[in-house]
Image (cartoon, rainbow, N blue to C red):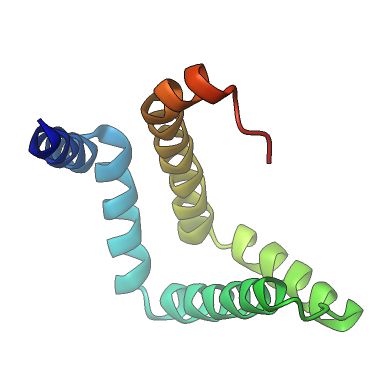
Length: 117
């Protein structure tokens, strides 16, 4: 019976890959990567994002200067049309994944009650 979970999970993976949300995200990601300036700007943004997340997870305080720099980077990438569209598609895909996660976790929520972050 347990292997059935994996079969269903792989079917779900396939469905996600075939979804309009994922296909749109993939196309926009490819578009950003094929535009040299957009790719460079997006990579810098992602590197900064990862650096801040790593510091937060390590318990290292984020300085005011780092926060201001991050806010400037966000404003900059949001002004770039390709990157802005990619970020919107990422948000939609994230919402789909979140909803799928809620569905998958429903049996545990029913058993223990919803987990509050």
